[in-house]
Image (tube, rainbow, N blue to C red; front, side, top):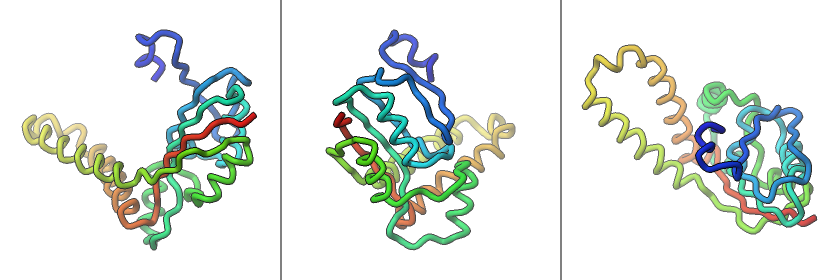
Length: 178
């Protein structure tokens, strides 16, 4: 990610982190974008507090995270999706995530259900990929078939869990109050 952002100068910083003990440069950033920060583990509480510690007062946060849905979940499907995603634990409840953000000092301005847009993007992307693969021919696919099948399983499970309501995808915009 850092290499892709290099042409934009020093205005964007990409920082690796340890999910169990996230730490960033203290009170340094004006904005933060956290895309599914729980994917590698950790708790929403520790992530929210680490982000708050890294931001200046009145800084902006945009966070996108998978949350537990209201719909029924087939335990084997959910467990398989968690394994494919490499997630050590099921996602938090939406209210639990929002409580953690507020406890860390954030005022939430927008909380949006982003699941419908992601489901549409998943379908559109796979249709486009399959068409490109069809045009490329089977010869180029032989070496990548196993990885492609695993990736398809992950995204189809994610789509099924999102559209069935077993998981949700939330986007929050918040401001650090302090």
